[in-house]
Image (cartoon, rainbow, N blue to C red; front, side, top):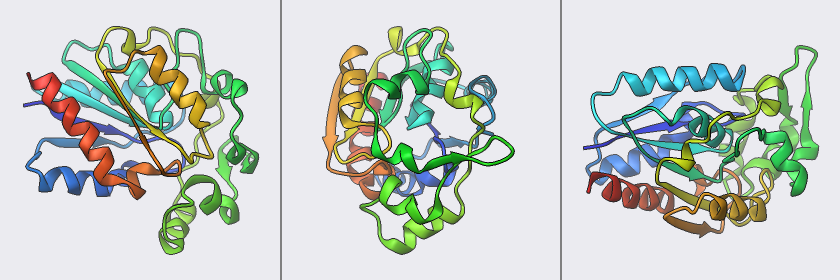
Length: 228
């Protein structure tokens, strides 16, 4: 049985996966783990993710949201990684960064991101709901805004070296109402990696929280494929 290893993105931690974890557990998928990445650099986050992968005795299905897609792209070439699932996520090619990918298809939420004096990037709290998770209840969005985990800007511009999606089977979920990664950019990345299955969900960027059933369905289909 494969272990699902969740990798969060910017502006949140492992708990962003809470609803998907519960949904998969209800379906009998007990082997789940989640990385808590420092969001200090792509190298640091990939190294921490690989440490978690190496702790698993058996195949691992990596599931990344947002920037977590770049992390699994960089970290996913280890031998026991069986596949990659991208949830409204970046999937850079060799030499690409989040910054270069975003340039071609600007998303409106980017205008609400600004660095602090220490180089951490924040979504303006009063703009978090409309930018990151407009389809979640206001109370839930408020908690996300207040507890957001701000990345260092270095992680945004770091290039990927050897993309794991060139060597591992992949799956992709497009968020059609995403304001942080343009939906057409998501479609382009899914097509480029020749994802085995691509689904489109009418959600904002935080589809893992607003559409956990659809996200769990995609993960479950990937698990069936990698487990044979």
